[in-house]
Image (cartoon, rainbow, N blue to C red):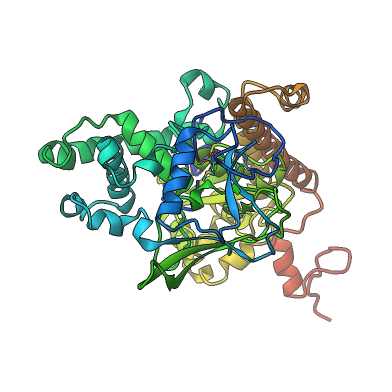
Length: 495
Ligand SMILES: C[S@@+](CC[C@H](N)C(=O)[O-])C[C@H]1O[C@@H](n2cnc3c(N)ncnc32)[C@H](O)[C@@H]1O
């Protein structure tokens, strides 16, 4: 899937398309639930009582009762669980004003590295990455069954989500050629290697703390839960699962992200504690579902990987173009030095978004890696402070032509890696009636192809302008006053 193209005959810098995303990040926001009748597309009627709603499973009812017993849910709580197109969700039981608090959960119910530290596995987990320690804690509580203090919560967690990390090989074939497939495989490999490490270093040597078998699938389940349910933007909290709050679904209609807060408030009759407080970003009528915005910055591929759904609008479509100065480039060290002086490196990643212009440093970087031949004098150290400014405009016809050719060839090559065309995908979308996973696959692959087409169009237009562009030498002569109005060169003639 990786396309690597030589940019210059003498220097072999390259453009890579479809790489595995370079940085595996853990984590940005939130949530998934339940494995019961997941997507029942019933109209969201006001759920007047969880107990009397036949669609609410016994496990959810028991969980709800536990929330009441623990005073997390009180008579003032304006929401209750309901079965919605997104699975389970929270439904307003009365009109809710914009910014009104819909739920509060005291710190003692939070599932985070502090909870792990205070548990029986705290000592052995202290050196682990936070997400790994919380994953082990979740698994430990799961295997305790009825003895777990989190049992009512764990009982309502889903067996998996529609995240691509849970897709079968056959399902993954539907995203053949996409960056999402590369990223998914990269993440799976990463999780597997972390599992093998923690199994050897922590789980097996501490059998008394882990008196049950933890399989790779179990570890993936815990990873998937964290990936889809954890909040990350709280003050002091980079990774925290908040039971009950994680029943809230995402809507593109919500365009702000500041609904979750850590506040201080009463926790029980005589004590105060930190509370996780969630406000409704929209004003709602009784019976409507409460939504939040999970993350405005995530692409559809991020959403598919984290939560197992995407948005239908193309605004979240993204394609990461990777450009690289090759070590075998004869000007490697000069080019690297220039890139670093300008905040870039040996490799640079440019996120291309639908309808947006190219990232500002992409073309100068492309021109830099394509620089060679008679333009190579610009790499000399006397130009070090001014070269980036030069690179912001066309350098020479061969340099500009080369970047167009290479980008266009890379786009064509990447486009040929998909097993369907944009038109075929559009037809499938029109036919409808797809499984949620196929819907994700088609949305992602058609989004990527449209972006590749968009990039190709940009460089096609540029290619058609090669004859009329102004290049470095011409600009330089003009700067010295040596070019006339018509572009003719003015020679100095002695009088
Ligand atoms: C924190 S959970 C929210 C509660 C969840 N619906 C449940 O049943 O537990 C997040 C998960 O809900 C589902 N979800 C949330 N918002 C969604 C949306 N707008 N479209 C489709 N699924 C959504 C996805 O499965 C996601 O991984």
